[in-house]
Image (cartoon, rainbow, N blue to C red; front, top):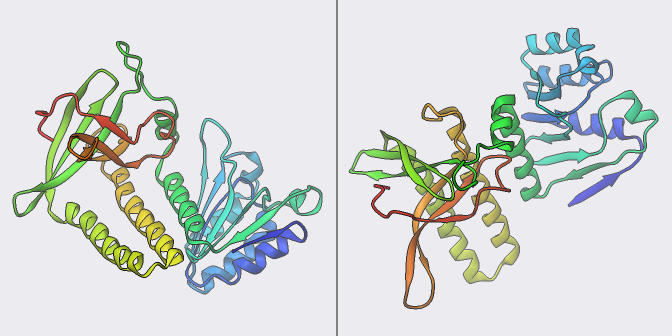
Length: 299
């Protein structure tokens, strides 16, 4: 359910913040800490994990004393710089509800501007905002620049992307390959072996949800079916996004893929590279699947 608010937005925001029991994840362009410091202090006293992303500018830097104080108490508040403004205004509370809209947490937004604030508890909306927060928390200015302005192949003009593949190798290992590809070439540029759990954690998520989804489909419960599909999508995306922590020595991993069979008709098909996760900002130039140029690449 979504509730929309157009008046008294600061009090609505603070009232909902005070309900937090475990965590808040906020990405808000501008916050007046003279108004919000006390509520963050209360949350920290209750043991609530507080993570906040702000735009790095002189408006927010005016509150560095408050920010440093809250960080010393256990909050994690970051001022981030990208090529453009970090213009979000959202907050996820306890991974259960999300506040979002045009409303900055400032005096002008509260008393002078025409603003809106929405509060939503729908799983898909909340989980998408959680993934966006995680991306902004992990990705640097240089990362965002690489993702929004990819290198293009001089020969074919296609974006040059790094796709990570993983599969079980023997009884005890996960094999990781990184395929660098554009529209005219595919080359494996990295191969390494990791503990089998790297692959099994991913397969375990698929098996866990697919079994539940199959049962629900038989029962015809469309609402529960969609909830489970959304949960599966979130858990898999959240797991695969951990590639940001180990980029195999490369500047960026653009996507994660699997080699899979695609049926063209009832009698014929072909192997393709199917993309199962895309990094933030790559949707416009990364396809959902790719033709395999050479089936003997070793993937």
